Image 1 (tube, one colour):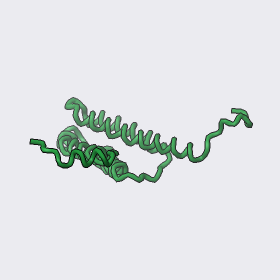
Image 2 (tube, one colour):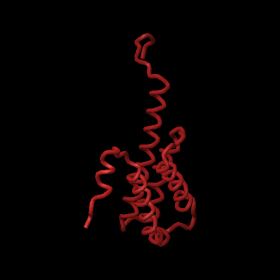
Image 3 (cartoon, rainbow, N blue to C red):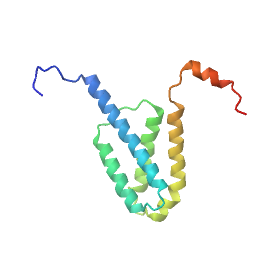
Image 4 (spheres, rainbow, N blue to C red):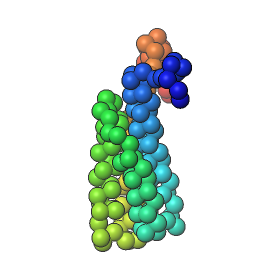
Length: 134
C-alpha cells in the first residue's frame, strides 16, 4: 500500500487483531483435540501428526498475555498434553486409549469454565436465581 493513503492500522488495532488470532488458534486446537479424542478410530500416530501441525501453527503466532482464566488454563492444558503425547516416544494407541476419557473430561471442564464466565446482564442473573427448577 502506498504511503499517504491513510489506511494504516493503529498499533492498538494490530494488537487486537493478533490477540484475536492467537485466541482463535488456541480454541481451534481444543476443538480439534476433542474431535480426535472422540474418534475411536484415531491412531496415536495420526493424533501426534495432527496435534504437531496445530501446535506448530499456534507457535508461529507471537505470544500474547492472556487475561481470562479460561484461556490461561487452555494454553497450559495444551502445553501439558503436547508434552505428554507428542513429546513422548512411547505414546502409542494404547496410551491414547488410556487417556481418551480423562482428556475429554478435561476439555469439557475447560469448556464449562469458558461458558461460566460468559457475560450475563445483572437483570437476567437475579431473575433466574430464585426460580424453582423442580
